[in-house]
Amino acid sequence: MNETLDSISGLGLVLRQKRAGHRVGLDAVLLAAAAGASAQHIVDVGAGVGAVGLALARRFSEARVDLVEIDEPTAALARDNAARNGLAERVRVVVADVMEAKARRAAELREGAADLVVTNPPYYAPGETRVSPDPARARAHAQTGVEALAAWLQASLALLAPGGRFGLIHRPEAMPSIYAALDRRLGDVAVRPVYPRAGEDAIRVIVTGVKGSHAPARLQPGLVLHEADGQATPAARAIHEGRATL
Image (cartoon, rainbow, N blue to C red; front, top):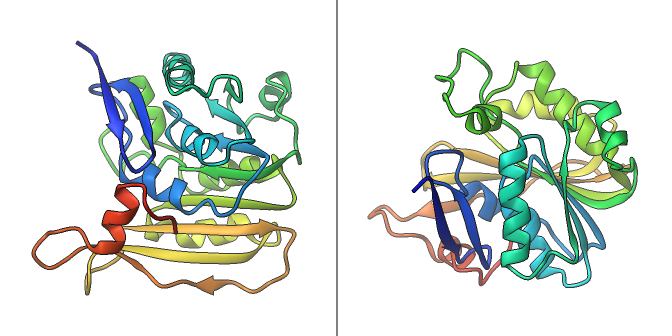
């Protein structure tokens, strides 16, 4: 069987996803937990099977959510997951390349309309990692470098209304590119490092901000995932079980 049906407690969802492709994991749980207060119109850019956007649709009971995904088979799974979790009436799955303005318009993705945009951008530039033979997984993990990440973030921000909130999760080494892409577009930027254990280097950063704000950037307290013995920390356990947000 090429698919699995998984209960993701940290997201409050049951998700159908490919067994061997890009799979929902810690990044989705953390990004959903960092989304902040209620929103009316949410866009999840690079939504995959819909994990983050659907989790936010469940948390914010009156929100409308657009799940934007370039890969049609993956988008079909997102559509099925919206129905499976009783969210289809408030969730629209959009098959589009967010980095192409013409594609955004064709998909009726209105610029400056969302009050919350979240994204888990592709992580690896070609040459940094072996490209998966699975097309959806390759798209999820490969970009053409700094310029592509900047284009992805700028296209995502174009969908956000002034005063709207933005959130992303990425690798720490991408921070220079992230700051460059967000410069003068986002204020009140907050960066939260995520550490595997106390005393170790961060493995992820969660970056949030407000479009058009002039508030200064902030470095937030880090989230430590595991104790020295490998057990989840109380904070990480609460997030994984859906009992806490960031």
